[in-house]
Length: 321
Image 1: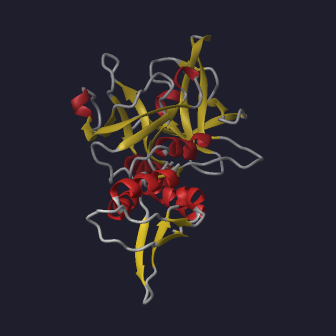
Image 2: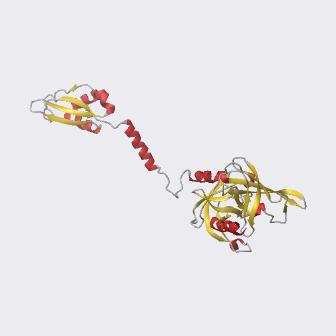
Image 3: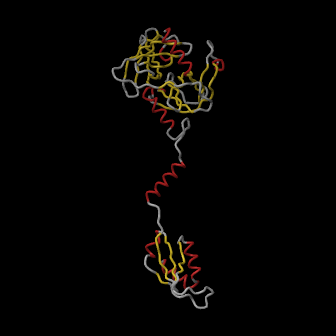
């Protein structure tokens, strides 16, 4: 088809129009002048047209009375235009795709950032359950979450989950039922509790290695930073919610809380009953707070104890009990 088309163009319009059309089709051409009377035209053809124009092609004489001077009987020969290997083409496509979708930089939010952060801390998050009694009667149980922060079985949680706050007496005598993400269950013991900060430590003993979470720094947080809340709301283990830091220094007086003055991290992560004691995590998978409460009459108002404050309390537990 291409050969017939080129012949017709040459016959009707002459060599110049033929060369122009060849150029527009991506075909290279070169007029070769020899000392002899014979002249030839060399045309480079893309790979897609190479098979259709592979045989020698002799052009007819220039049409009489044509304004184009006669070139005699030039012979037209073809040579191939080298094309990039398929591997190079694919490589270029991959490089282009990679440039259009770069990997997120450190501290940036990417497609898997939230999932990766949750995966780092998830195995160390536990479900806590403490039976509650009133005048010798079991009236339910207190549920919450916690985080294994040491391989020796140290669990960080909220005091109100494991300690009496409302006149109820624990029928478990300081014992806590602990369930790990992998399904293992342990009986834990309340070791320390600070009622003012609502922070407590529970200890379990395991003959096999325990997953642990890395503690981070809350002082570097800024309003708008992404955070992840992990816990067991309503005993639904391995529940993950995400949001942003709304305020880094919410005063306890702003919340109408008496007693010692405290500062909290305010986020819009979804927090429900059972999330108390669970970790608030940054996008690097580090624990930067302990979830303790939410505003019941509003959505997106959740509060956590900053990790910097928790670290001081843990140090106090170690030195003074």
